[in-house]
Amino acid sequence: MKVTDHLTRAAGRTLFSFEVLPPKKGENIHTLFSHIEPLLEFKPPFIDVTYHREEYVYRQHPNGLLEKKTVRRRPGTVGICAAIKNRFDVDTVPHLICGGFSKEETENALIDLNFLGIDNVLALRGDPIKSEGYFKPEPDGHSYACDLIGQVANLNKGEYLDEGQDDTWATDFCIGTAGYPEKHFESPNYAADLRHLKHKVDRGADYIVTQMFFDNEQYFSFERRCREAGILVPIIPGLKPLTTKSQLTMLPRSFYLNLPEELAEAVRLCPDNEAARQIGIEWCINQSRELMAHGVPCLHYYSMGKSESIRRVAAALF
Ligand code: FAD
Image (cartoon, rainbow, N blue to C red; front, side, top):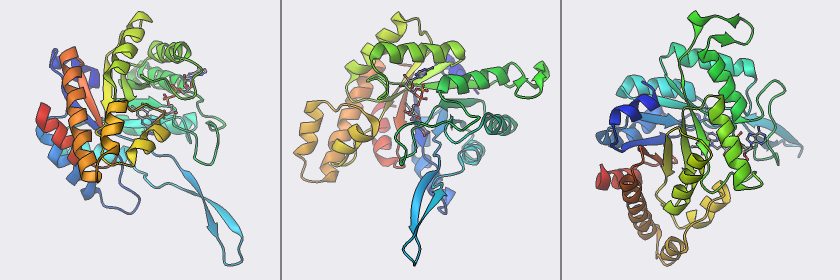
């Protein structure tokens, strides 16, 4: 079932959802299942599975020469979505990115998803590869998420790349897109970022999931600016309980976001990670409560591979 149908069915009740990472190559899918199982009691209508593109690593040969190798550490998003859906009877949302994909490969991935009975995709551009300073699309790939969204929307009309249009082949994907309450880091300003977000919705995005934020005012202001700009689709806030002291610097560096001084100071004063985790959980519960009272359709939690803190947050709320 589509994410938007779940939101409509909830009729004003706030839903709980979360995101998982594919296990690292060579690891067992049962480890992932064991992270998901404790969260099922909170009845997530859908679970997102992230997509991780290739990275470049340098291997040193005995003669000292370095060889550049392409590796993918977390492959398998499509298969994992199917495995989660079949095992737990819950809808899954594979993340699909522009980076590393030609349009033809994207079409093939969408055909696979359609065969597997997966009704949703979160369409993203993806970040630049770590060793590259800026995002480089494949020669026949998409440069921006709006173009990927356009391709999925075309498939929903039965428009395949080389086959022309045939309504009987039309898919029916619900398309999610990313939004940034604190602005995407490459955007020159909020107005430009919002214009691009509106364009993604106009091309076919059915709902928005936000980047994580730690100050609800950022979300409220983002939501207000979206509505004023005519972006009327559901907006799902993305949240993450802070779990270690090192995330005080890692999260701003990786996700280009701000941590409120009250939270940062409390975590800084913690003697150890367990104390920091407790503060992170309490902060996230308070954020979630305020967002629920505001009437958000769903709270979406970033697990970053760990579910225990999310379980503790959800247990206080759902
Ligand atoms: P876009 O919407 O294409 O925007 C990228 C930048 O270009 C923005 O600055 C935007 O303002 C600008 N822009 C957009 N359209 C245009 C245009 N037509 N002309 C000029 N500028 C334009 N990454 C992964 O690799 N895997 C994941 O699974 C993943 N999951 C994510 C889930 C969520 C909820 C979020 C918020 C992010 C996720 N990311 C993931 C990270 C995401 O890929 C990066 O933030 C990426 O840098 C931007 O992706 P986007 O889809 O927002 O890009």
